[in-house]
Each structure stands twice: as C-alpha cells, then as structure tokens.
Image (cartoon, rainbow, N blue to C red; front, side, top):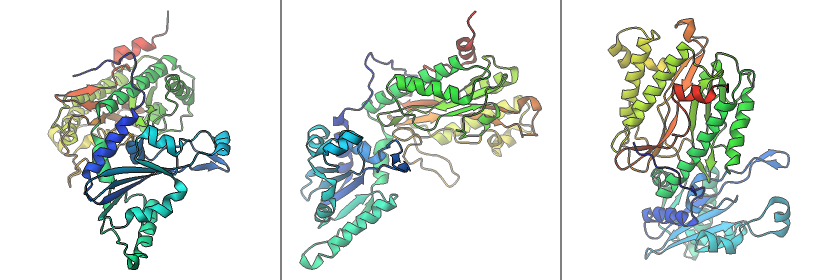
Length: 453
C-alpha cells in the first residue's frame, strides 16, 4: 500500500495550464480538418426568479476550467494539423455584474484560460457555420439532445450555402467516449486534488462521529458535515449527503435525513465534497451511542474485512470482475458463519445468494462526477472486465443490508445496515487509499466516540 501525506499547501484547484493539456490530449485524437464542439451548462431556475446553484457541464469544465454558463468551446484542427481553441462566453456587463457577479469576459478568457480566441455568445450563430464549412468530421456529445439539435441547425445553414461553394461535414462523431477515456486516467495534479478532497471529507466524517448523540436528528449531523466541508473551502457536497440512522441505512439512496437518532442503532453516513469540480465519496457506519452491539460488531467487521480484502488486491491488471469474485465469496462465507445464509457454501456462491444482502456493486469510477465516466468493459454476464491502470480512481464500498422487514433471518440481525467506502487510486505497483484519515476500525470508532470522563 502507498500512502502519500498531504503537504503544507495541499492543492485545492487545478492550474489553468492543466486544462490546456486536456484540450491538447483531446485534439490529438482528432483527425486533421475537423472540429469539436463542447457546450457549457445553463443556469436552471429553481423557483420564480431564483436559480439552483450552478453546476458546470463536466466535459466542458474538464477542457476549460471555465465556470460560467452558456459558453461554448470550439476546437479546430486544420488541414495541416494546426490546433486552435475558441471560447464563446458571456460579455462583460456592468449592470449584470452589479446584480449577479463578475464575468471573465473575452480578454481575460484568452489571457488566463489559454484559448486562442474568445468571442461573445451573441456571435455563435454567425461564426459557427463558417467554422463547420468544409470540415471532414464534427465531434460533439450525442447524449445532449438539445445541443445536438443546435448542431444540426448550424449544419443546415451550411447546407443552405452549397450552391455558393459551402461543403457540409461528411461525418459526425460522438465526443463523449473520447473525453471519458481521457477523464478516466487522472494526472498527478488531479490525484493531488482528489487526495485533498478526501482529506477534508474524512475530517467531516470524524466530526459527525464526535457530534453524534442519541436524540439528535439526522439533519443535525448533516449540518455538522456541511460545516466541516465549508470550513475548508468546500461549500458544495459532491452529492446529496446520506445520513441514515437505523433501518434507514437499508434505503440505499436515503436523503430525507429527518429521523431522530435512536439508542442501539447504527448511523450510516455517505458524504463527500466537491473540490474544484472533483468529487470525494466516502461512507462510514458507526453506533449512535458510541458502542457496537455484538450483532452490529459482527456485521461491521465482516464488511470491513471484505473492503480491505478488495482494496489490498488492487493493482494494474486487476479488474472489478476479479474483485467481485473475491469479495462475494468472502461475504458469502461470513454470512454462512453468522447463520444469515444457510446451505452449501459452493452452491450459495454459485447462485450469488450474497446479493440478497449485498445489493449494489462493489465500486465505481470517481472523478469530476461521483459516478464518473469511463467504460467498464461489461460482458454479457454483466462482469466489469476492464483491467485497472495507473491513474484510475475508484470507490470500493461493500455493504450488508438487513431491513426490519426481512423475516428470513433471526430478529437480532434485523434493522442493521452497514456500508464502508473508501476512494482508491491505482498506482504503478498497487494502490493508494485516499480515505485514510477517517476512523473505520471498531476500536478507532469507539475510542473517538467515547464520552469524556
């Protein structure tokens, strides 16, 4: 295992020069005489004249680092291979900036963001058909149907000028899989940023354990988590935090967070920050009263051992499919030993009976999205066969879920839900666990939560 300590000045955002490198990497995949189009997100109305907190289109952000709405990135690769990047963005506007905040504008876009040229968004419809004219291929994301319709509008305008010598591009190419492959392998700076995001998230999980008390509400613990995030400059969680006491832990995406915390129950917290667009995704489960019961301890230790078994096997060449075989067999045997599963061990493993209680996947890619882009190479048997490579980042998150309504098990197990989740980077020879500063052994948790004498 490799663990790299945080420096005195941990990275909290990528250098803008890194985004130029991302653009260059994409343009290296483009043939000569081609064009690529990447739209920014738009602001979304929440109610009347208020908006949701702005979240940038992740592919656009990966290629620009630019965090304003309604922009457009155009990448051009000429017939001689010359590469240019053009950013259309909102103009400087003194009145708007008084009410809504400052804009970058076109001059600073070139100076600070490293694009070749920048124009106002009002110029898009006039200039885009000229950029498209005569290109052999057009790259854009096919899944964005609204933007795809806009691309076809521009292409239609080119087609209308054929008699004047215009030439419509011959081929449309989906840009999303290409960007996904680039995003899947993180650079050293991206890894440093995600390491820092995990460190802050781990501090928040520690705070939650320290502030947890019987009688508090789930939302009060959520507030403690958000407080710790903000204290370190991460105002936004990467996703809606799950703070699930007792049987609520058996609802995988529980976000109501409005129940009272009860004595002798566990509390499952799945929470992580977004730092400069990059996500952390950590889950911890602990006793609300600070002391595991015998049954809780047995389930918890089984999940913890399964997680560590999977993580310790991670290295280049390994795959989720292989990790699933290891983990599912281990959890099956453990549930048999506890009497929760009954029958022949080999048959239970073959029938994947563990999935009655481990009901989700072992992990997923992590990066600019919590469930990040990147092909898993899923087989017809739904196995994730893709071999791990240095620079990939993933979650490992086994869990056991036994709802109160499960009458197939002894009553003493019912209502227990445990998930433990770490964020793991694949290194040259093994792995690095980013989530090391949040307590997870039984002794660590009980010691941290022990009431002062």
